[in-house]
Length: 200
Image (cartoon, rainbow, N blue to C red; front, top):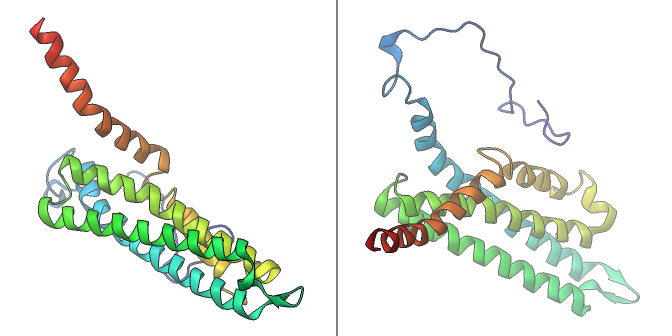
């Protein structure tokens, strides 16, 4: 299947239909009914990897944006001399470095606690929301600085944008991860309120 018009062959995104499939008991991993648990164990590190790649794409888009702004002249001077372009470059740096720090923190927590702890699950959800959004923003700004060329296959920006935009859906859409973060943020308050009520 294509994603936003792009074909990621040879790996790509296949469509698989399972019809009347039975798994012998000897081939069941972890135990019956534990498939979701197994999938989640794989998804945590996979989400981290997706986010690291998205940061790399954002960094490359920033490099392309800066190069283009230094070489493209408008009204007799390079775009890079325009304060609005300098602000864009600065905002991109903030987005990229904030994303990198959040991912590094998440990776450190995974190393320390594994993917199953509440705090780690919350951080994985946070990076899955924040990093693709930030990368899309940086790449979109790079496309804007390139003008029509940014939409053309001469540059990798449109393809990079499509990939990062897809990350906001694959392995669980933003809304699912927002729910996870929201529930984990609410949890200590709900528990404190329950303790207060039990004392009354």
